[in-house]
Length: 367
Image 1: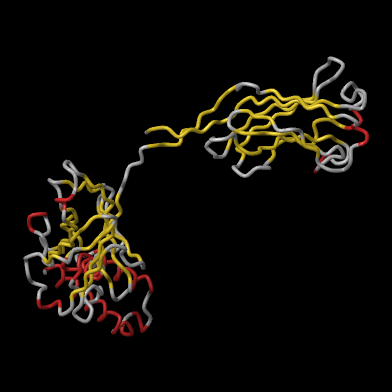
Image 2 (image 1 turned 90 degrees about the vertical axis):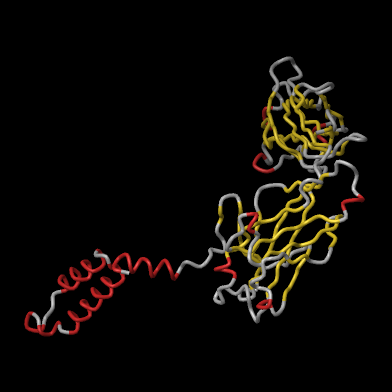
């Protein structure tokens, strides 16, 4: 109170100086004097009063704040499991006993919303609205039952036409000993009842719930990488090379790992190598029967054999091949056409080799 009085006094003093500035220094006031006077007032006890005013102005509940593990944010979509709307809310807004909704079904189970409009004092809900979801009709569930839930609770903000969504990171484990979960401090009463916030409009309020059952999977997809798998070298001899047309020629398919593969090339060249170089590509095709069809890792050494015993021309490639057949990886220049005569083209034939160094294999196994 003393700080507020001092602040008001200082503000009045500043106004007085400005009002009578014409009497000082022959009607001309220095900007430095004004700044000094204002700085003096702000840095005095009046600063406490001004900060207090700003704080009070912004003291409304931050709808997008993260409070510990609990998150609160606004969203436009309605809750998917349950909405309860209460009209003439002023009749019950001071009541301490809970409101129990009708039974509703969500994700194969039956539930009720439990609402404390003045807070559940036994759950730290003083000065808050408390909201819970209770599982019902558990007599029909097997002995030792447990239902794991990802739970979201909602308060409708009619002013913004959005739902305040309250959740946390914890999975709610419903069982015989814990049939009710929720939030004792869903929203502060000071925010909920503030007419400027928009939660109570035309004496009406709405709450909601969204229940997602977590059913842990019993199986997982396991991807492993096999180095030097069986039958991993494929040889393709192309005859009558000089008579080949300007199109892509394909080898027969070969199986390595879970997938069929084939080689392909255009004798007239492709991309940057056309028309002066010979390309070679590895194509991923279909899968063997009963294989798990996923992207397949393929690391390959591509070679153009030197048919007179010298070193081959080499290229390497490694990539994920998508599920759809026909994807290819390789090079557009494994050899220049002019170099074919140096032992690579013999009796009008060339020989490609593909060595599958590593392939991935996918299996479905228990977790």
